[in-house]
Image 1 (cartoon, one colour):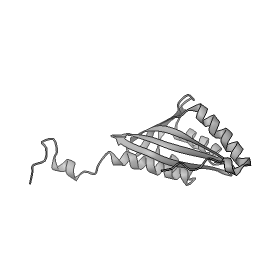
Image 2: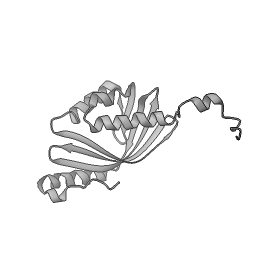
Image 3: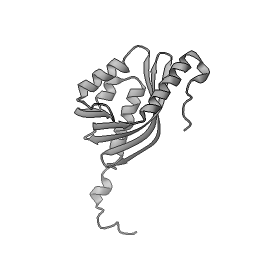
Image 4: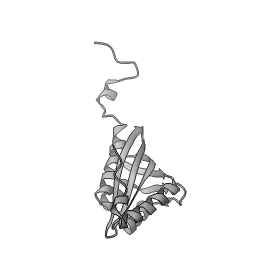
Length: 159
């Protein structure tokens, strides 16, 4: 049997793959949001989390993010869905390319998002989303039109 490379020790072979843990945290976080479990999602965030939608002010702190989620996703008739197109982890950093769907009653706005999540000790410490505001505006207009004319509604992205 061949010897492992010199920088590989038995301890490192016995240790679980560290890159997968941050990715799993992010996947669980998105699943909690999809299920409408705001508290479950927020508990995966550090108490001093920094959440940024690039171009808007950064939210700091788990409780502030919880209040923002409750005011939006926690409203009656509100929902969130996500289609992850690609996800990768490099150490504590997880990158996602996805389509997010925001729903409010019959309004369904669907748009592309790229996200960066930094995970430390099983909790998200930084969440930064990048998207095109013109695409969000177009998705909202399409969503409003689709609320009146169902044929105009955005279809789920092909996977």
